[in-house]
Length: 226
Ligand SMILES: N[C@@H](CCC(=O)N[C@@H](CS)C(=O)NCC(=O)O)C(=O)O
Image (cartoon, rainbow, N blue to C red; front, side, top):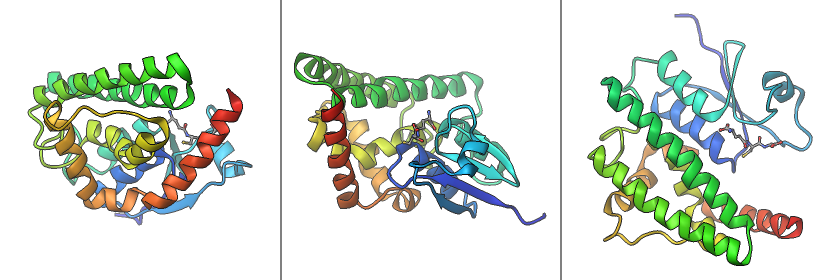
């Protein structure tokens, strides 16, 4: 096979870029990481993702693939040799998409809303998030997660959720998010423990202190803009 040219336009703190890195690492794909400053955006980023102009963008033999979850799907299909990110059964595959969508909308989006809000609005978002974690626990139970949605190896839904774990200490510290206890959500806690130890996460997750410092800067920006 001809040598592959794989590059990832990335930003070190981005949970979305972490998804792309996790997928590439899980598949054992060699890639070059191109760190974007985002301010200003590089010509390469503007050309490769003219619609959203956001990272991550995967460049595979000159073809640009934007959007983190599109990248994860693409990586799964372009490198089928290693363990797949989905179960074979069509219903189970559909449910993986369902829970991944839930993770995006009901975990990530509500967390960012809670982090940016103040007063009663913040309390309401934090309560909603707490309930959403309990709902996510029911998803882990339905999949009989061991400890991942995908079994013992990480798959699509796991990669979707994993960067939340990298950011978790920052979210707890700065946004005041509350997780259910290990008694209330044992599968969620097992997932958190297992993903932190996963070799792909060791590469994808940034240094905790560095992320905490970046989180403080973001919080100041959000406070100034509300
Ligand atoms: N839905 C996108 C979100 C990507 C995203 O929000 N990227 C941020 C960095 S975390 C970005 O590029 N921001 C620059 C901008 O919004 O101008 C994905 O899943 O890839």
